[in-house]
Length: 269
Image (tube, rainbow, N blue to C red; front, side):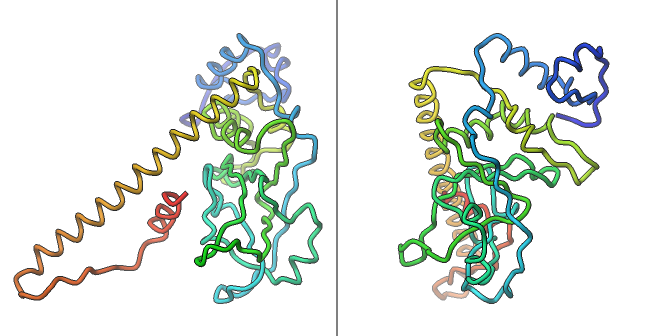
C-alpha cells in the first residue's frame, strides 16, 4: 500500500465501519478487495478467541549491556514475523522480574504482538522458552516491554493465531487500523479484536496450519542452504586471491553487521 492515499466515500459507508473512521486507508484497493472477499464467506471476529485482556509490558530498568544474568525483556526489535531474536533482548534484574505481576511473566504458547512504532506494527510470534548453548532450557525468566502485547488465545491454537495475524489478510487489517502521527502510529486492542477472518471447519484450519508450517520449514532450509553457499563462495574467492603466497589459505571472518546476525538467527528458526 503506497501512501498518501486519497479516496472519496459516502458517510453511509463510513457508518457501516465499526471504527467510524474517515480515513483514506479504508478505501485502499487492498482493503476494499479484502472486504469484498470476506463479505462473500462466513467470518469471525478475533475477539471470539481472546477472552483475556491483552497484557502490555512496562518500561523496564535495564541492566548494563555487559551483564548476562537476569531476566530477558523481549522488545519490538526482537520480535520478527513468526520468530523471536533473543540475541536482541536486554535484561532486567531477577528481583525486578520477581516483582512483576504474574500475567507479565511469559509462558510457552503466549502470542507476542508489536502494537506501535510505524513499520514495526503487526509483527507476531509465539513464545517458546529458548535453549542455551548447552541445550538446556533457559530459566532466567522472560517478559515484554511496553511496546509488545501478550495475547493468550482460547479455542484456537497460538500458532494458528500467529499465522492469521501475519498473513496478508491480517497485515492489511493492521495497515488500515493504525492511527496516530507519522512515526508514532499504533493499533489498539479494540481494533485487533475486530479483525475478521474466514470461518471454516476445524479440519480446514488444521490443514491450513500444517500446509504453511511445512512451507515455512522448507523456506528456512533453503535460506540456510543459500547462506552456506554464499559463505563457501567467499571462501573460494579468498582462496584464489591468496593462493599465490603458497600457504594454506586461512578462512577470514569479519564482524557481522546487526542485520546479518538477525538473518542467521532467523534462518535458525
